Length: 114
Image 1 (cartoon, helix red, strand yellow):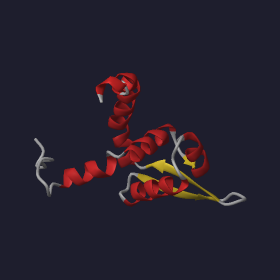
Image 2 (cartoon, rainbow, N blue to C red; image 1 turned 90 degrees about the horizontal axis):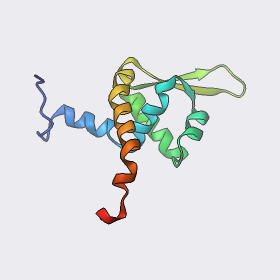
Image 3 (tube, rainbow, N blue to C red; image 1 turned 60 degrees about the vertical axis):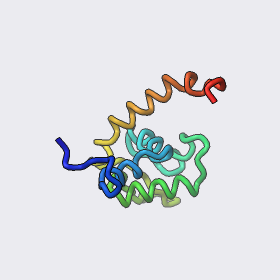
């Protein structure tokens, strides 16, 4: 059994949930699940995300060792992002959550539930 309890206010596991449970983090991790991607390709793939939000999300994931950034020796210079081994370990749960959301989107979007 884990020594962490997400019900406690100061639990490190709760901080981890805050990091990975926001919409853009889930979508970016899921988007990088197929392999490394250039910034522009990732931005094009993720509908509705602004450049600023994508940059902030990638930096947050990079600071927490879930994503790594690699400069490319291309003209013009570019960068590519990939999941680290820790990020790869998050891919399973994130993929399951994304698939569940896709399967139940219509049920949850029902206007009669408001």
